[in-house]
Length: 583
Image 1 (cartoon, rainbow, N blue to C red):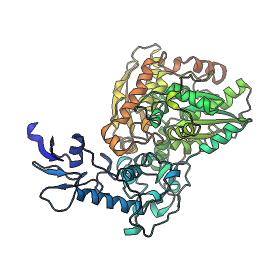
Image 2 (cartoon, rainbow, N blue to C red):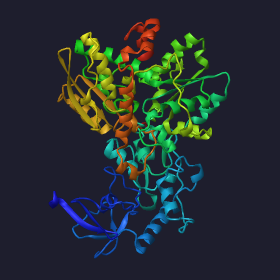
Image 3 (cartoon, one colour):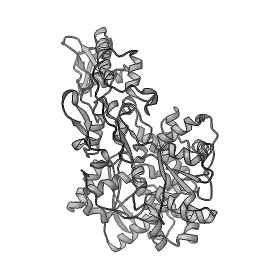
């Protein structure tokens, strides 16, 4: 090990690091901060912005610390007058071609450019000159693209091209005309974008953000003739607190419910209940396919970004998709039928809002297939970030709130539903119900560690009732592509496949709180949020979806059984082949 270490000096501090370490990494390990903008660990390490420059003794010019590897005996200075002046000039030049509407920007207070401007005491723009004015792309139901706030860091490009393997955006044109755009400079709505939102999570400024719809929610909340219901996804409750400076992964379920009630929603329900119904239908569908050896492997359909991806790229494999709607869509359908009838509410006067970690849900909810009797299952989708804005607008001191519980009669959910928010969770929840159904026993072994963890692809063989079931859980669309190619070419013999569009699952969705590049480099955000969901599951009294008493009751009173005619009509859907480019 000693032979793999390099000794260098950074700001008069002796540092030992492994060979191959960059100066930036070495400095951070030593507790020395070097500013960055374009750097995103393991995703975008290209040295474009030059904010991370340092001086190395014995060398002319500056070294770009995010890509410069350390060497034995190297002496590095990170804050000399020359370095500080150069960084100031670089920052001035970036800001000179940047929209300066910080007060009204959705990223105000959480913008890496704004933070650097404050840190470097940028009080005026030194370089005034011609600025490019770009039209804002707000055509899609999910993403708004505002190049006037882009700093050409290319972090979004790297996330789309290198992490997701989509390549919907890239740098086009040359010189002063360079910009990040799509094929033919068309809207994201008209190209091969899946609306996963990983570009938003990567963006250091407000150049990319979700299409905000909270104004529509406020209007409905003020209307006395509208019955407004809100449901919240499992991943939201372990991330919302971060918007109020609480530790990453804090479970704020009780405070979240209280805040929603104070906002004026008539009922606050748990999407986890919808997830329990998804498991009931999905497990039943899988058992039927498995026993009949029909259209295997069955692939989960809870992630709308993933569904859009397969519709555009692998339409020949669509028959493998589960026909189950995602949990919030199922729940919306039940609210406007079963619940509306029970409570004597006209479903036409009901307005269902879903709080989701995902911006692709905004696209999903307006799909033609997500309607019953002419009514949308869900009327509005807002992200975790949007909910935090509503709470702040209402001047609610979130951290001081008391805890509340979800409303009944639709508020009961199981631990199995909670783990839907992390990669492998949907499969694990389905296997819990499938194994009890196939064996006819209430089995105590319900934790399937084989499909847990942060790996992008997790393969396992699960023995249930004496039969081996080959499963795989993949998160991130690059990994989804790998699995689909295996299926398409016949190289793999899977029976059950879980795919989520976002790396790490819903806890890392495109609508979750955005973390700076420095935090993302130092903290495993996915693990902290996922661990919180597993803790919710472990502490739950009921951990299997088929044991949820409310689920049982609704099947007895309304749906009859999983896969029944009414269940198929309300809780299942269909898919369509889509063109990648609508141009």
